[in-house]
Image (cartoon, rainbow, N blue to C red; front, side, top):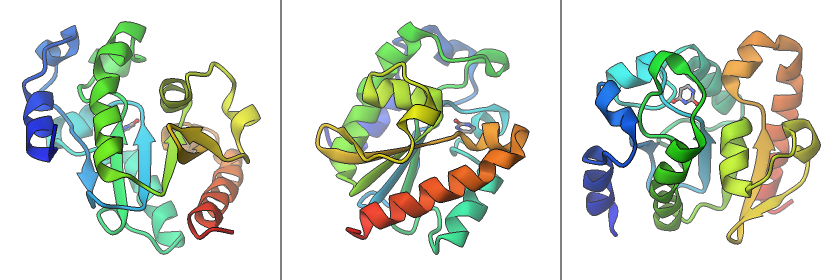
Length: 183
Ligand code: URA
């Protein structure tokens, strides 16, 4: 499946019940041949309204962290979520929703062929690494998603509630940059 086919598959997907309750699908945004792929959880209210990932408060923090690294959304960076539809009331993704939706993310990764995946938060990590391990225990190592180097960090929405952990997330981003740059 190429980009246009994948985009139209996602926008017309009704494989789980979420599409019936959301405004629109949120496919992903950015440079389709980016070296960096950032993966979050699912659209929230703002993302559902605008059709773009990470445009609410968590997205502002993410943009600031990217800027501090000399990066920007759309410039060598692609941003996507595990789920393309907003779960009602921002509840956690259900396992069957992740199971149905993860093929879309998998194809995005195959098309982008990033140099690095930054998995942000529990759901991205569980989905991409097939692991129930904590973020804390997986940080600081280079993991692999079908051969693509993958680094784990906290979700920006978690950082908004746990400000002291911002320093750890910054360390993770520097580690990710070193990985992209080849140490
Ligand atoms: N949180 C996410 O995981 N993704 C978004 O797009 C917005 C908030």
